[in-house]
Length: 264
Ligand code: NAD
Image (cartoon, rainbow, N blue to C red; front, side, top):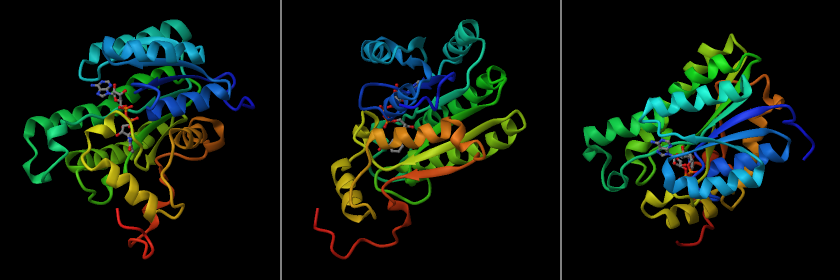
């Protein structure tokens, strides 16, 4: 790397394993000289995230479950004590009951609707609120979204509704925090086979569909999402906020299945 992130410190939330999108972003930032802190969700993930943190020389910032705001507070309090402040924050967190990422959206339960919105939407606002006082020299906050926010995608169901609310949150937070030089953006990633994606039915079909019908005729990798994330977290994007940027091989511009796409 050439040190684009030298002197910057950031918190990365949402690494489950080495296939996580947040891991792609963490690697891109570390490669450019960023100093990182990583959270994990419970002991099961600590076993995976611990060695990954070591690989990047990153600080393990502790357990964080966004449904338990005391654990969120503990992470930010710990960082304030350790570093005094932070320059960037990655929010790569989403959850919905697997059972409801199938069948009709109209069948979604109130309980899972609220839980999905809490974990996948409210959590961005909760962490932005806690990051703001730590970003005394301005900062950059990045979240991850999906095209299912804009158009109906098979099986995405309540998560599509949550991503639409997440993208609206990006715009409202951009205005709230902009006066303090804090930018808030989202990367809308094409489908990638991660742990979270394993909850989505017919995922292999969705990957193939994107491969055959996107302008680049392939899917994207966590390294590619990581490099685009790096742009948002670095000063290269200092004039950009409130944006939802597609890293999807161009899939979102296509209006019709490609005529020469093979059958899946
Ligand atoms: P992943 O399973 O690797 O990461 C999801 C993360 O969310 C995990 O680290 C998990 O610990 C965390 N999480 C879930 N519930 C949590 C809670 N209550 N508290 C704290 N953390 C919690 O999968 P991923 O695909 O890398 O997902 C990261 C983000 O990217 C998600 O917002 C996802 O919706 C988004 N995204 C994924 C794809 C894709 O195809 N994989 C495409 C577009 C957007």
